[in-house]
Amino acid sequence: MRVEVELPESESNNRDEATVSFWYVEEDEEIEEGEDIVEMITEKTTFNITAPVSGRLVEILAQEGDVVKVGDIMAVLETEADEEEEEEDEE
Image: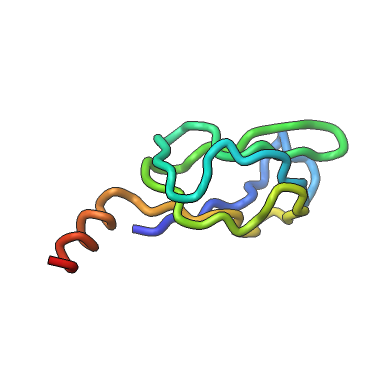
């Protein structure tokens, strides 16, 4: 299953946009649910977004320095169930 990582609305992000500061994970890297995936900054605070599921980061859509708005899709993760299905389809 593909899971989109969005900029969430939260108390730590008291604005409607933030700047991508640093990606902790690169494309094609595995990540565990709850691990920090990206650091975000606003005028008043710095906060991290964590992986909503365990899987592989297949695409980064917002690059370091990009300003994103709440709800914007920043990256796409693929769960292990999808990877297993793809491997079965290839056989």
